[in-house]
Every structure is written in structure tokens, then in C-alpha cells.
Figure 1 (cartoon, rainbow, N blue to C red):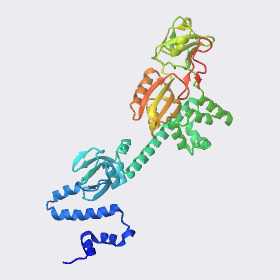
Figure 2 (spheres, rainbow, N blue to C red):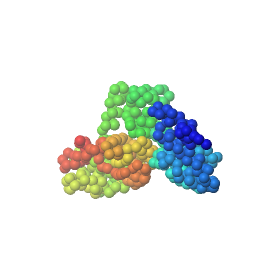
Figure 3 (cartoon, rainbow, N blue to C red):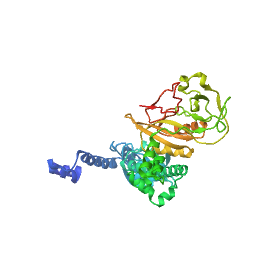
Figure 4 (tube, one colour):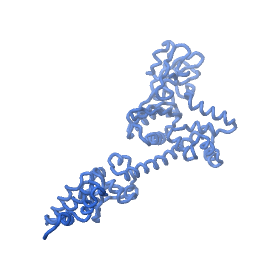
Length: 423
């Protein structure tokens, strides 16, 4: 049989390759397309040469393109995925619902971790469970944009729902404390009016902002309190949010026993915020009664020794005490919501908060919270430290936003009860 050069190309490489040569400089095919035509021709050659189907599949498995992975469904359908793709990517490729409820995977009939990288020729079966939902950990190993986008969407939706529930709970708790009925404020539209005034959109967005500590419940209540001019309510709420919380007051019989002293006013120093269970010491303040410090408070070293008193905690009264927690976390979405949710689970009320983002991708968070005693605080700190993305969490004795220092106590006129913040 005699062939011209063009006839030979047509017979060997097919119509597409013939068209490619004919068009010359006007080709619509990319170099990658040409490689695929060549690869398909090579597959046909293997099929003719390799009589054993298992040998043919083994050869095919190791020769597919390096930047793509071809895997099979249990029914034998071929699915194309990027190199490094996992069963989760495969699940979302099949259907969004399959990905959302992916509980496990079988690769070639064997149970495998969802983070397993798929190889050419793998047969993948996805195990689903309607009670399973996407995990934040999946973002560490998925490769396809579809899977990543869907997982992030699910997480944002879930975290928003949690922040709304948490924010509502925090606002209702603050409302009960200040005598404001939040349900009534929702029904009569006054809460929506506050939300719109603060450019928060609506009531749910307001709850979400409280849950994420973008705004405090105390500030919202300040705008809802009746029988006060609006401007005065706003000013008082903003003042309460910016200023350090007033130190709790108690008589000795309520919480603290002072050796050799009766019927004296007791205050708790804001520089160290002592809690029941902390070792404490008393300091006689001129005209202010006795100020209670923690025994290891740095400011105690600067006080006049002759005015120090031996004191101890007395009784088992359950009441809220202020404390401050400093948290260093990775700057990722949702971390603040998870912390706030944990605090709510522990029965810890958030009085105020400050957030500072660093250039190194971390976030500093300072919460002023209310706890019943030192054990309550340290139990909460321990749980926070076990959350993902938390780098450090500790109790601090400094009020004010992150980055501020306490002013040292001096013998005259300052017993830890006055303004202790300085830039």
C-alpha cells in the first residue's frame, strides 16, 4: 500500500491531528491537547499489545498525566481530579450533598482516611451519614475550589447561627441584670431601631455582633433603657463600655474576714481583681476602708507595710467577681465565636472585650469576665487553651485594651482603686 505523507499522518494520528497540521499557524489546539492526542494513540497501542487486562490497567495507572488524577466510581464512571485530591474532593465532585454528609471513604474496597491522596485508577466509594457535617479540618487537605468553597460556606453559616444564639443569650442576661425585657424590645421594634441606628442591619445581625464581641451587650442595653433622653442613654452606655468596671463592694461578713477589724467597707483592687480562692492581703486606704489585693500582686510591694492586714475568704456565697483573660490566637474566622460559645457553656459572662490583630497573623483578645471564684476562672482558661487555633491563654491583672499597662500603686492616694490605665 502506497501512502502520501499526509495520508500517513491521517492514518497514524487521526483526523484531529490532520486538521492540526492543515491549519498550521491557526491551530485551536494547545500543546496540552496535542499531548493528549498522542497519549490516546499510545493507549490504543497498549491495548493491542497487552493481552492481560490487569497488566493494561497497571500500565495505564502509572502513565496518566502528572497534574491530573483519574479515579473510578463504584459503577465504573471515570472522574478527573487535580493531583493531590482526596476523597472529600471526590465526594463534592459527585454531589454537594454527598460532600456535606461525607463520613468516610473506601479506596479499592478498603476503609481509608478522608485525607488520603487519590492515585490514578483508584476506585472510590463515599460513605455518607445525614448527621455528619463538614469539618474545618477538611480545609487543611482539600484541593478543589468547589470543595473548599462549600466547606467555608457551611462553616460561616454554622458559626453565624451560633453567634446569633450566643449574642441573644448574652443580651437577655444583661437585660435581666438591668431590668430590660429583651423579648418586649423585639416585639415593639425598639431593638430593631437600635440595630439600624448602629448600622447593624437587623436584630439577628445585632445578636451576631454581640456573639462575636464586636459590640457589648451593655452598650445595647444602654440604648434600650427607658425614661432617659436618648443622648444621655447613649453617652452612659459608651462611658460604661470604655471605663473600667467599678470594683465590687462587700462587707467582711459577706466574703472576707479581716483579722482584728469589724464593720469596715471592703473593696477589691482593680489592678489584680482577687477572686475567692486566691491568697489575699488587705490594705488600709485613707477614707476608703480596706482594699483587697492578691498576695502576689506586684503593687503590694509598693505599699506601706504597717497598713497591710491579714485577711481571708469567708463563707460560700456565690456571686460574680470580675476577672481578665488574655488570649493569643491565630487570626482565622470563627475563633472568637468558639471562645464566646465556650464561655457561655461555662457560665462565664463577658462584661467587655478588646481585640487587636497583629501583622504576624495572630490576634490578641482581652476579655473582662465575671466568674464565681478562682477555680471557676482557671477551669475556663484550661478549656480555652484546648481549642484549635489558641496559642496562649492566661489570667491578667491589667484592665483596659490589649497593649496597656497598669500604673504602679504608690503609698499615698492610690490603693489600686483609681484610674490604673495609661497608654
